[in-house]
Every structure is written in C-alpha cells, then in structure tokens.
Length: 294
Image 1 (tube, rainbow, N blue to C red):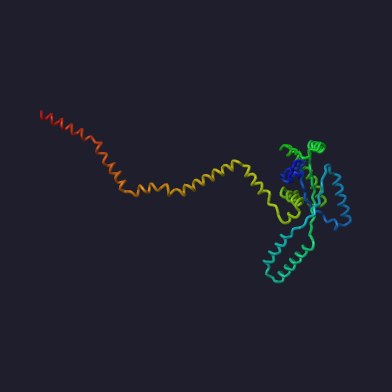
Image 2: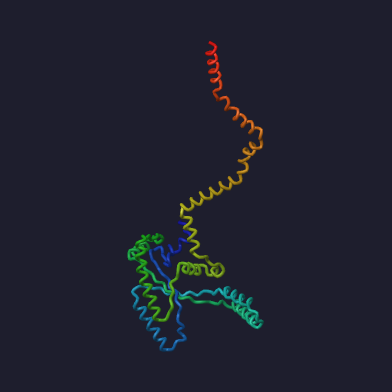
C-alpha cells in the first residue's frame, strides 16, 4: 500500500503568473466577477440581461466553470478602523454614537454569521494529447502519474488560454459585469480558504513574493558560497583585530631594553676600523725606512 501525502492528493502541480496548472496538464485562469443586482432591475432590463447571458453561453466554443463560494466575513479590520476613528474623535456626541455602533456590530456577529458570496468564472485549456493521456491513465488506473510539458508547450498553451479569457471578459463587460483576473496570491488565498475555512479567518497567509525570494536565494549556490567566504573573511579580520596587541608584545619588550639596543649600536660602530688598511701603510713605511738606511 502506497503512503500518499496530503499534497499528492491535490490536483495542483503549480501556480505561476496567475495560471493554475493541474497534474493532468490543464491550465486555468480564474476570473473574479462583481454581479449585477438582478432584483432591482426593471422587467425590460431583466429580459435584456437574460438574453445577453443566453447569447454569451451559446457563443462559447469551449467549456467554462461558474464557481459560487460563500464565506464568513472577517470584520476585524473594520472594527479596528472604527476604533481608530474613535480615538481621533474629540466630539463627545460622535464618540457616543461610534461606541453604540461598535456594540451593535459586536452583538450582531455573535448572534449570526455574516456571510458573503463570491462569483468566479474558471476558464481552462488542455492540449489534445494531454486529454488522450488522461483518458488512458484513468482507463488503466494510473491516475496519479503527472503529465510533464516543456516550456515552449506551456507558452503556446498560455496564448490559447489568453484568447479564451479575453472572449469571456469582453462578453461579461457587455452585461455590465466587472471582472478581474486573479493573481497568484489571490488564487492561493482562494484555495487556502476552501481547504481551511476556519483557519483562514484567524491565520492569514503571507505574500508569495517573500517566499519566492527566499527560495531563489537558497537555489543560487554561487551567492551562498560567496556569502560564506565573506563571513569567513570577516571572522578572520575580527580575530586579527583582537589578537593584534598580543602579536606586538615582542616588539615592545625589545624597545623596553635600551641597553641591548645600545650594545648592538656600539658593535656596529666598532666594526668599521677593522676593515681599514692601516697595516698595509705600516709595512710601506718600514720598507721606505730600510731604503734610506742602506
């Protein structure tokens, strides 16, 4: 029996540049939409919206997924904002009203969960050869095998996906529906909220850019080796600074003995007379005297 980890059970291979890559070779983009309040529209506007939405679905030559997510609203940032306003307000009447409003919001959150609905449109693209591989892997029971794609194939698939996303966003704009493509950080937060609904309200994720920067530094071996060498040099310099008075002690001892230094100077001054040619001059005077005597 194979012991599979929790991460291996997820059908997510990577999230790159706002693109979700699954293990079966599918790439997807998630569009966050702000819906129109259909109930406040008139009958003519309602019929017009229904007709536009129907024509939008009929014009699509590729499948899309509409995701509706209900989540509990975290109002702690809003309460913190109100408390800051309360501290800056000097009018006693305004302070009293803000305190009453804070008490009302606190009681309301205790009695009922304040929910919010999010509407997403998921646009995907899968290469035909990956679809055939996925079919045969499911047929023969090898569904855990990941499909690998080259960088050129990934870029080509991204272009096809971008065309589909543009088609969807333009059609949504005709129905006065604002759309925003989720970034990598937003996609991670979306999945984090789906798999951890309670923890996502209390523990927020950090930015992915900081995580990626640490990973890039750890993979750059040259920078790590250079940093290690620099640290070693700094440690050696610090050791030399601390050991410098000890290495100069012999020089100080030689200076503290003036007699020995004076003796060396005397020896050097006595040596020059021994190197002169005085004996040669004495012999020459003796020979000259002998000549006069003869």
